[in-house]
Length: 234
Image (cartoon, rainbow, N blue to C red):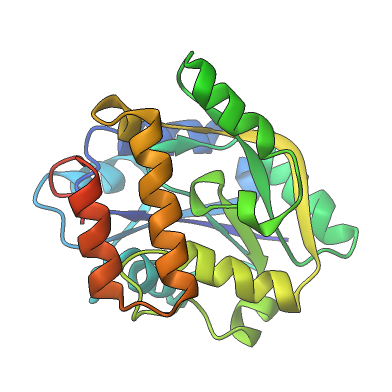
């Protein structure tokens, strides 16, 4: 079984070398390929990715959905594992995915652990142990078999935001989902310039808009209006 680790990036020079080096050393790494699919970074993300030993691609379409689809189009794996550039999967992630696939699961995710000692973020992370779609997100990292990915017709490239949640809904409905009881380490950088409450309110607002069929432009504008976010994030 070969697993293709696909990392969508945009101006992630600060994180990408460390992440790739880490992924190359985790258990089962010899069964993987690491693909960085970049959305037109203006920093050295692509150069650093290639130097670190990843397959570095310039995606013809900017936006995580298009970038992840493009990464898949160049992948050789039987399973696709989508990892955000500001996260670190657990050291046994590849072995856990292989185990889940062998047990009959064709998709799944992990829990969350933040790189922060914030009590409120620890509470957030605690709830991710429950296997409900509401507690799932792309930053926890998502794996899916090649067959199921093709069946749900990939990520929807019309999405600028909420693309992971939309994809999770599709594989949740049509696949056999496994919540692995290990945690992905997630950056708390979004909380560094925003209060815990403001992030929760923004997330809740955008999810409600998504449920009501709001346009991607309106959801993205709302998110940017409600939160300060790192430069060049979108």
